[in-house]
Image (cartoon, rainbow, N blue to C red; front, top):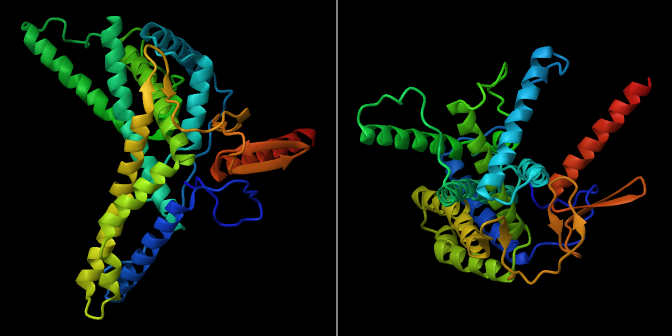
Amino acid sequence: MRLHDRSGSSRAHTIATAPPVLENIEHELEALADRAEAELVGAAILPGVGPVSAAHSPKGDPRDPLRREREATRQVMEHDIIRLHRQLETGIGPGRMAQLAGALTAHAPAPAGAPWTRFQDRVEGEVLRSLYARAGEAAWARLQDRLAQTGLAWPALDGLAKTPAPEDLQRQRGAHTERVRADFLLTPPGQAAALIHGTVDAWRYGYPARNSYLWLQTALCGVAAALRSEVFATSVELWLWRSSDLDQELLKRVSEKLKDARSILEGEMHNTTDAAEVVERVNEVCATVIPQVVWNHAAKRLRWNSPHVLALQESSGREAGSRTDPVCGMTLPERGAVERLDSEGHVFYFCCVSCRLQFEERSQWKQEKTGKERV
């Protein structure tokens, strides 16, 4: 996932850049990793990794009557999710649901282990995966809090109404809810974005009966998915428009972790064991240290504007702007858009190169479709 275009592509029009501290950190990490891994590859310790291509399955026929019936049922599910948002006082309505689904889709982190072509992509990918995972934990806790505050509860489990011992019933309900929580935390970003609107791709041929346990449980998970996207989108905004204090904290923590890594490789007596240690340190910085610092920074600036929506504390010092990214819906600082695109006399601003590319692809698809219809 490329959140910043540092490649100098002629298609990108960069009008603002991130503070240089993180870029310097990335260059330092990349230099250490390249040198250490080169030595390990030379010693036949690390295998090479080839590119991985993604397969896309074609969409089905939208005129299929069965799919129409499924869509009608999904709309009922979405209505119930909206009603739950209202009952739980999350402050999220239909318009906000659409924004959150778009933001999650636009900034969805690539799966762990996905190939990357630039070291910056690796760092940003690790940060996004960490933010998404932690946003899931925060959202689930928020859902439980709203259930307790409003007096609502998870629906009764099917088939357990005649359990003789109340403590056994409570234990089974608790165990099942924990399994639901675990599954929710593992939900991929694309599925979570769809779930915000009540779409469950696994139910290809129909939804369960309305007001059944599975129906009600899914509606609650749809609420949790929106809460998760709320936390994730706000954290990503803090990451994209990172402040100088975050940069300084990153520099401090990375310097502490690496310490003598460069001196190890510069010494004449180092061996493959030393090189492997440097690789391990670089991996830890990318996968653990930097994401932890970013989340800690975001967590201090996130608050639940009880009983309504998640909001940013007024601590960033950024000017409020009127520009909005047309892909993810993120509000851009007045002079802080990373990407812009001039198209047919209109100027569009984007928070990152990924959103701009998605917009261009979408526009190209519309033009091709219009051309075919005219023919």
